[in-house]
Length: 349
Image 1 (spheres, rainbow, N blue to C red):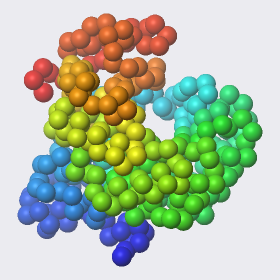
Image 2 (image 1 turned 135 degrees about the horizontal axis):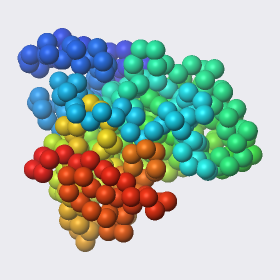
Image 3 (image 1 turned 30 degrees about the vertical axis):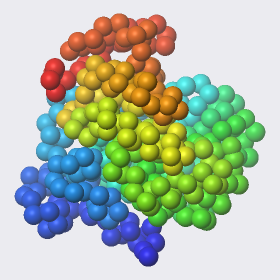
Image 4 (image 1 turned 60 degrees about the vertical axis):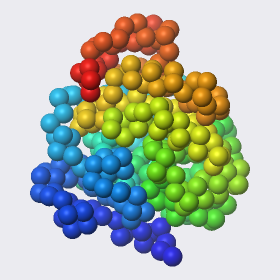
């Protein structure tokens, strides 16, 4: 069996490889890949049944990424909320530490599409250590989230060093890791990794399954291995047009996640990121899906439907008290009471 490092080296990275495998024309994708990189692990590539299906849409470049009318590359205002290049400090008690600049598979809907995998946007070890120093001198930082990029592309040795340094900071109570490795590179969830994570509790992992077909035996085994190591695993699904914007698909996903000891945590409405407009649904779609799920699924299986408001104002649940108006430009209420406009795709999208 190939190691996770070998699988990463064997990943598909060019449109020509796509053309050879699927017999489709991909010349138009060269310009897209020059701006937003391509990488698909062998495990995830094998899940594609045909061009255009739910897996294909998540990982294969699309020319619409370059023609999206949405102008915002950083809609959550992370750059302005970054006291250091790889630190985002939006909420007083939580610090987002970007410890990696690459991913095992590049999701076409990524909220950090502007930088992840892009040349010149790598994260150095020095920047990671500077980020840990920032946490150490910020007493309000009780919750540290490792993200990126993909934190689990680091070696066990480096990850252990980072986690142990954070655990030695007296005011850090909780450490979280955001990862899509169980979905696209489940071989990364090794017994040695789980043994490492077991030693730095309290630690939580949030992963990112979007479709029932991603719940392969290997992915299930990876999540069960984490759970057996005492690591609570949550899942953050993104609502994606043409992928999972259907109550039956999401019900099957959430029900199966519970069986593999993964708690559905968030259903994210798509961020207003340039290059992702073809994935965006209307808020009404998400509201209707959530209404259809209630009463048909256990409450444990129903995530919170949220939107991360533009400008870095934070996440709000899409429930009546936060929705002032729907339409082509919805109006949502931020936690501070401000009224925030949220652009929507045309009706019928």
